[in-house]
Amino acid sequence: MAALIVRGGEVVSVSGVFAADVVIDGEKIVGLVDPGTGTADREIDARGCYVLPGGIDTHTHLENPALAFTTVSSDDFHTGTIAAAAGGTTTIVDFVKSRPEESIYDAFQARRAVADEKVVVDYGLHPMVPSNALEVDSISELRQLAAEGATSWKFFMAYHGMMVDDATLIAGFRAAAEEGVLPMVHAENGHLVQDATDRLVEAGMVEEHHHLAAHTHTSEQEAVHRAIAIAESVGSALFVVHVSSRYAAAEIQQARARAVPVHGETCPQYLLAAYEDYEGLGHEAAKYLCSPPIRERANQESLWDALVSDALSTIGTDHAAFCMGQPDDLPPQKGRGVGYFPDVPNGVPGIEDRLSLIWQAGVRQGRFDVSRFVDLVSTRPARLFGLYPQKGTIAPGSDADLVVWDPEARRTVRAADQHMRTDYNLYEGTEIVGGPTHVVSRGELVVEHGEISAARGRGRYLARRRPIEPVGSGG
Ligand SMILES: [Zn+2]
Image (cartoon, rainbow, N blue to C red; front, top):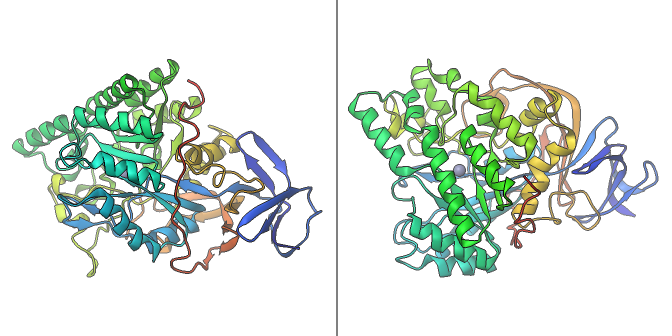
């Protein structure tokens, strides 16, 4: 007899919804059977609920060094993955940043050791390409890491100390194409951002909300256009993380229309928060500071449209949590830059609320259906980042990562109730309808009606395969 059965729910895939019981043995799904026909030692009652593949967040920054290693984000691999699980996310892909003069290969191994001991869900890692990659031959180390399952590499087009020049993008994208690796870009023109920042500083326009003016639509659009041109020239695929500007999304849409394999991600904060929310908040605006910035409300609906048209095809969080207050055991948090936006650590919390926020605003408000939702938050990320079909689908042979999703579950977002280690939530007070009742990770019930039981370190490193969908699914 199988170990576990999820009974009476509606199983969701990218192609439809169907009534089935999900039979789980050990860490794997072993069958989908007609409702009521399977038997198992233990049963989860999913009547009235959807059964979704576990959420996959391919953009998290847990215990992430920031501002030239002077601070670190507040959620570590333990608290961050507990928060992920609580919200229905059973896989994350985080990043590896090397210190100046440190080898990216060594940094990768060190980060794995840190994460392995803490994670409660499975995880992968994207190495960040060092700004001096061509001088120190990081490319050969990245090729080695690809063989160890790091089949996506992140390139920064902004931030001094991290940004790479066009020569590095060209060589790096070419190496990625040769290795079957998906290159990712943080696409803002770092020189334009720095120039705008310098001018704002000279003019004394340095309050928190002026951050937006330092990160223009143009600087994002230009970088996206250039990254696409380089990818197209060397024959590589491309993944643009955290698209925030409708003009950047339009660049991706145009490239996809001519069959360039470029893919775009956006994040809940760009879809649901707006400049108007923090413009008048004074120092409290630091809660909203991230890059690219949370833009004007008039920009939002175009991003939703891009998710519907598949110009944008995944939703990650870019979870980089910092506290407004200053816990004793952490380096300077958001308060580091009070009244001076260039010193405010960039990043917002979101790993816990991604599924419920997008469910409410995407599915419940009628922008797309439940199959599209699953594609955006699980299946497409799995396909693009070399995890499919181990992850991202409910099918025999796949890991038993799934979420029983009650479309009528109600809660009010409160920082005081969350598992993320921050003292605020951008959506404080928002009423949400729809949420997880049970979360299963590799066959283990890790969340049951809000109660989390997941041993520290139970998550595993995922040696990812080559992406199976470099060309995307059309324009
Ligand atoms: Zn990020």
